[in-house]
Image (tube, rainbow, N blue to C red; front, side):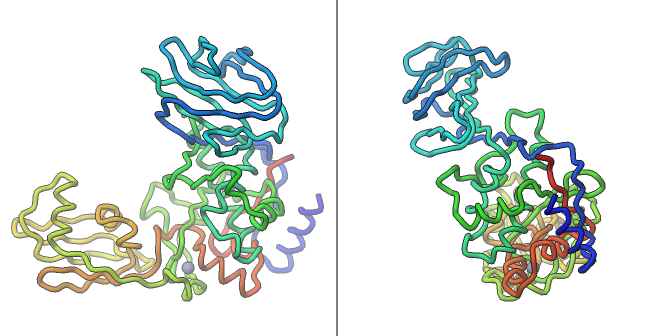
Length: 382
Ligand SMILES: [Zn+2]
């Protein structure tokens, strides 16, 4: 209960609007299901201590023992494990000791492993692990463990919240998150680092909520001066995600960028997306939203003018080439030069802004309050 007192004092003194609601229904023991391999024909699993293999849905024990070092593959009637034919298409392999890792193709993971056999004989591997362990595993890929501790704490809350948001969204699917850039990049136990573990432990179970629901705590590298309103990009209209001014990321290495793309290249990419154009004459900014980002563009061709949303245009050219939709355009006869600010979609936490806030002495509550105004910090029950 110590932590609640600390928060109450902080919110009184600094009027952050952040408070703790300990009565949240989900618990800190919440599991996250991470898809780690898809369409794997065969893999090697190693468990050094006691283990159990169960049928996933019925919980029926299929196999158990001490020390597992096995080749796992699919066969017509089920899953082949260490030379034994298990008549099941969905199994769960788990070390009996709660802290005992499971090694999959040489990489160590916490928790257990669900193996689903697909049509044919390929396998999907889904790692089930505690939310806290998942946050430790992804944080090192999504941030730098050299960053200020208060920044890392703010990020730990954000990563945890975002993982729970995804888990809620995908609860009826086979997994909550995948270990690639489409959700958060998860690296297993090898990815854990001391200072990140410290930041995750210091904020254990803390998540952001708004209006009694888990906040979709989006984040990005650098906003470039102002964060984006989520409703511009997605069907998410929430007070904490309406966009704020950020005066902290000016010294981010991604604050400004410049790139030149030929009109012919744009034409080719457009064609790849299924629309035939003979020649692009101009690319014109057709509108900006209140954060200053481009909302749509007019592509002037020799046949007709085509309007496209800036986010779709960015995805078509490549989100790492057009780093944000906050840009201006300079054109020559053959090329378009984009000069822009920031990197990423711009919604929620600006990570480089959070870095400089932490560096200049802000604590994590102040960081979260700037980027998610009106949200509540809640602690999952133990
Ligand atoms: Zn920023």
